[in-house]
Length: 264
Image 1 (cartoon, rainbow, N blue to C red):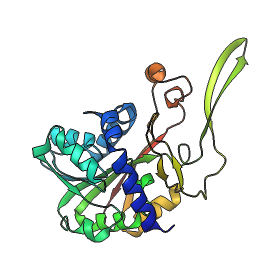
Image 2: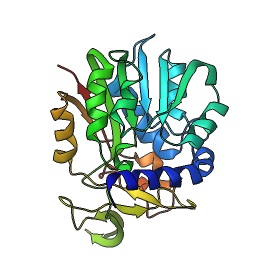
Image 3: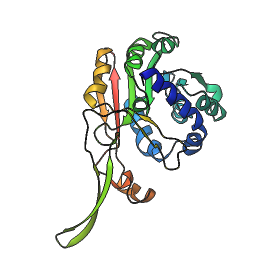
Image 4: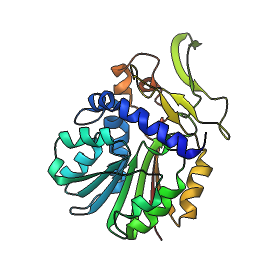
């Protein structure tokens, strides 16, 4: 199956499960979004009042609404028509320009307007699309001089296509402790696989693993430079928010990677 076919199947899957994800995220996003993703994106974005921001892969609009609430002029796009429909039903609909745009289609992205944006955000979308070069290439033209591109993605080293959770008991100096961790058996070369993004999800979707070097190389080829990097993890206070064997118990292992790219 080529990238076009994979992308079209992905679009169909996301349209089918858009309502599930809209209900999961609600107005302010799920636990991952509230604790890890949004804070790290906002930190690197360093938003200034009145800036024009493009949200690529906006889903139900949780981040777009936050940006609009912070004073940004927001355009938000997603390739799922059903996701855009549901996003428009929530708050700030009049303050956000929602459009159906495929992040793998450079020409359609460029139709949003060259040098129209101060910043672009792409939150938890890169691992869901089969090809990222068109997005980076378009972003370098959509941004104004000195513009920034902030993305958050599943951490390629720890939370990609093949993590296996484990839990062990250990006696350390007479104290029995329980330790949770992640096993990784491959990193450099992994095929696209279908996986569940959340418990109870009606249909799995494709995940596309890229080692960090490969992911960033596409950005570098589009003239971006990397000038900010965060690896958010859950805090001790979050430990009991989810079942025992979950990311909330792994405070030393970041499940998310957030980065800032700039045009020189």
